Image (cartoon, rainbow, N blue to C red; front, side, top):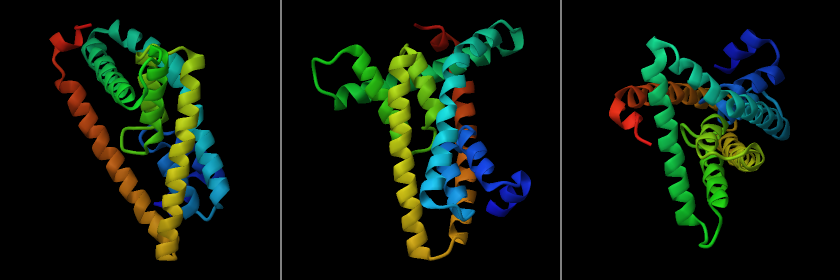
Length: 211
């Protein structure tokens, strides 16, 4: 997988940036690829962090306008409604987790920021800047309140993945093992995408119209 991407892009640094920008792959895939391609620890982290963090801007400003545009198109309206509900459910879940982990007497904005941070900082499937920013959008966070938890959360996630990659390298002693990890990440991303599409498509219309 690493060799294929290297041949396809032709530049390891650009490849790391591009991979980390891709939804579902994001920071996790970017770091694994960069280390597997032989880039250094800090270089791999920086390039992947930069590429994944940049996604915050287009997602924050374009997600709702694109969904609203799709709602105006007959063939896409129902699916756009379900996508919106999907992210609203994610946002509600993130807020509940934040309220459980946070201290009492905090503002609502604080809990929304904390929920966004937790969602981005834990490097699990279907978490990251893309989904985390969507969560912030549907929590109605302003740009200035959303960017900090996303940026810091992504940094924490990057640090965790970077350390895990180094542990794998230390135990295996061979960069080739990261190639298999990358295959696994791509396979997992594909599976999670299919699951997400199924969940979105199965959401009931009546539920999607609830406020």
